[in-house]
Amino acid sequence: MNLSDHGELAFSLRLARRDESALEEAYERYGPVVLAYVTRYVGRDEAEDVLQRTFLDVWRGASRYDPSQRFAGWLFTIAHHRAIDVLRARRHVVVDVDAIHDLIGEDGRETVNRFADAADVRWAVARLPEHERTVLEMAYFNDLTQPEIAAHLRVPLGTVKARAARGTRRLGRILSDAEPQG
Image (cartoon, rainbow, N blue to C red; front, side, top):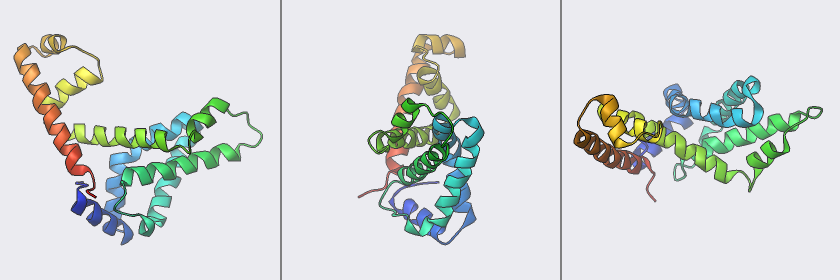
């Protein structure tokens, strides 16, 4: 799903027309990260329900989505509200005050934006060629140095450096192309 200016508009129009494939694309791209986001606050038992309600709200409210705004931000704001709804419904259950504060915070936008950014980065990383993706994942997610990566992959250090540089540049282009312009 290319979320460039034209792509974002086409995506939002498909969603507004109730094109199920648009919802499926959004779910495929953001579902796992939204699930992780809401699980932090409502727990695993209720997170799946919150995820489903979030995407149901996306489907119902698709005509209200403004394509000049980031779709991920809109989606995570909906997830944020559904998680708060679940926490509020726990009238007789002890709720971790720190969890509520983290979720609500300064209206939750900072946390929502962090998760939206993480979803976008993971989506972009998945689109890298495998040899570049592997090097970047090992460096950033496994916290390995370039010499350690070279030893693990059994390739020269220069190959790792080149793959990391190319992968980082390509990742920047993918993310830049995915941002709505304006």
